[in-house]
Each structure stands twice: as structure tokens, then as C-alpha cells.
Image 1: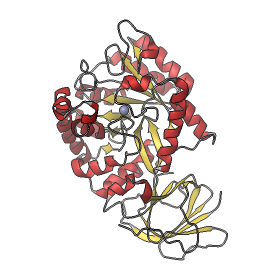
Image 2 (image 1 turned 45 degrees about the horizontal axis):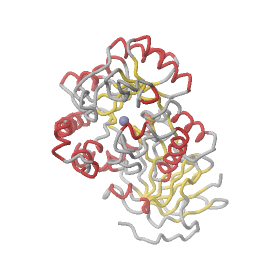
Image 3 (image 1 turned 180 degrees about the vertical axis):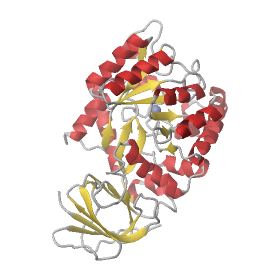
Image 4 (image 1 turned 30 degrees about the horizontal axis):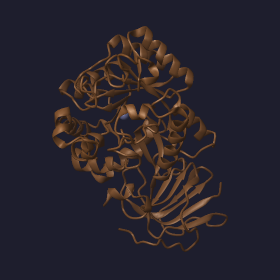
Length: 429
Ligand SMILES: [Zn+2]
């Protein structure tokens, strides 16, 4: 691994401080030095990248990733992909995320039992490129809930998107199976979802007994639990049972917000509002007009979610980007759109939006003191971006603007020219 000096960069360091000009020296897989002026760091024996004023910032963290979702419009189309193709797809998506600047991703659920684990292991072994990755289980659900795609005449588990359990014993069995496979987290579908007509987002499906068993088994092995929790009651279940990672969290009341706030150092909320937005505004090609989406409950959920998330952000509850990219309406690698939504709809400043993907991202990766900032001693996960994300967050989802991506001190996307006098082809926005 060559030592690299990024010079002539504008640094967004991920601490919340205002950007500053300087240079950054990477040695091995760590950030060795951060200089606040030009030519303050040694250049002997290092590759010098003169970035001509481009932005250097920490790699982005996706808090709610589904590598195995195959950009289809329905859960069934995802599930029916044969295993061999599905493994290759999942691996290729992992590489795309990394090259798009997502140097860490938190798996939120996979479509077949071991897809996430196999891809994480292959990344860690250097077999395939991909982000730092926490592997999830399949979704665990109950009969009739989100993820139970079996039909009365085809009740086989292979035809179901999620693993269907009934009662604490079956839950224990399912959780132990995924722990045996080596997942980092167990995914529970606590609430319904407007994707499923008979299990709307406001409804709650799992009993406390089932949830308690799942959490106990996961914690006993030192693993984490994440939950699909759109309904108010399911959010409360997350807090009551100590489920750290809460996905969606659309419907809240004062009590649920108070509970979250009182435990805000423990929980993360990754809402994934892009899919709701897309269902309402961009899904006509898949037969979902705005009227139909509203009929499915998406307008009600959009309004509720924005109100809930605005309040959460105000109360200091950690809200992170990512979620439910990998559907036809929300294709993979447009994930940075969440940051634009956070500013537009949740009242975050652009800096807060960036921190939600970097500093807070490191915390959800359980590496808050080691990752997510441009700071001496921290792991060298860095992006070189053409332009200023603080004035235009949209550039973070433009591949051409992502000049370089470094993970763990190695380039996943090489800067085009590496010399002492690099000038990028385009000028900063
Ligand atoms: Zn999800």
C-alpha cells in the first residue's frame, strides 16, 4: 500500500468544523497527518495528488443497505432470482457502492439466507471489492406480514422473501440459524408496509414474546438487532426491547418520541424516505400513479414521516441516510439523494446531512473513534469530490464528480492523474 499525500484539497473533516484548505497524508491504511496549509507535509517517498482545490471528505456510510435487492419493482421479482445469479448480482452491487463513495454499509436484510454473509466474507478476504460491510439476516416476519410472500398453494419457504415464524420457539430457531451463518445483525419486520395491502405501514405484527426472544438470542452472541418499524407501536417495541437500529420510524406520538429521546445514544433511525417519495412521484412507469400511491397509504405516511423525522432531528435523535435503494423506483447508488431530502424536508443543514453520513455513520458501524472523520490516526476512508457538496449535495450522486475513492488506505477508484501538478478536467462548481 503506497503512502499518499492529498495536497491542495478543501477538507470537510466530518467533525462539523467549517471546511478548510490543507493537505492530508495517508500512510498504510490510516490518516497519518492533516496539515492546515499547503506544502506543510513531507512529499518524499509518497504519491502526491494535487487535487486543485477539490473536496476531500470522509467516505460515506449507508445505514440501511440491501445489496441483494435487484432493482425490481416487487419483492417477488427479487426473490425469484436464482441463487447463482443472485450471488453475482449482490457482489457486483457491493463494488458499485464502494466506487460511488459508500465506503461503509450496514446491511439491512438480504433476499436469501446467506447472501450478505458470503459477500461480506468475500470482501474481507479481498476476493471482491466492496465497502466495509455489516451482514444482515433475511427479514424475519410472521404469517401475513411484510415479507411473507408464500401463497396458499405454494407455502414453501423458498418462495418467501422473509423467513416466516410463529411464536417464540420458531423465532429462536430462525435467529439461531442466522447466527450460525455468521450475520452481524438480525432483521425483524415488526410493522407492516404499504407495499402489502393487507399489512399497512401503521400496523404492528410481532408479539413482545417473539421480539424478546430474538433480541435475547442475538445479544447472547454479541450481535445486533435491526427492525423494520414504520408503526408507532413497533417503534416503542424497539426502545422497550433495546433494538438499536430502527428503520423507517414513520408514525410517532409524543410517548414514542420521548422514549427515543431518552435513549438517543443507543438508537439509530434510518428512515429510507426515498422510496416513499418515489412511490408518490416517480412510479408511474410501474403502474403506480400518484392516486394509486396515495390509495396505498403513501401520502399519509409521507406526511407522518416528515413530521416525525423533523421532530427527531430537533430532539437530537440520530437520523442517518440510506434505505431501500435497490427497487426499480429507487435504483442502487442514488443513495446520496437522502442527504438532499434531509435538508429539504427534515430541516438539516447541508453540514448536518453530511455528518449524518460520516460521523454518525461511523457510530452505526461501531467505529465512532476510528472512522468517519478526516483526523490523524483514523482509518483512511476518503473521497475526493469535484466541487463543494455543502453548496450542492447532488454532486455526491454523480459518478463523474467522484474523482477518487479510498477505502482502508487503498484506492477503490483511482484519481485519473497522479502527479505533483494534477489539474482536473473540469472546474469546481
Ligand atoms: Zn429496508
